[in-house]
Length: 116
Ligand SMILES: [Zn+2]
Image (tube, rainbow, N blue to C red; front, top):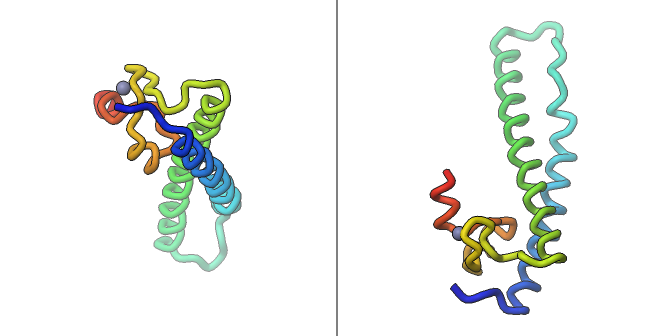
């Protein structure tokens, strides 16, 4: 696998910045909804169940979002200090196509699929 070119690094840096922004916005938007559900008057059992269900999805999504944000920040750091674009497991360059889709990827596709 070829290493990233300068042009590719510039593209990926911009993607990481944009992703960081989007994830932070998403976390802010979902913040209010992720607080504990308050019991409302005149509310049927079913809608309360619905609300709890929706909330658990929201909380799960928030966890995914905040983990992804952590990965983005980590890779931004690796871009500064070096090591970005190289697999943390086998140390081979990660394919540009993969980084285009997941700029925060820290492992190549082979190592990632072994890891799951
Ligand atoms: Zn690897």
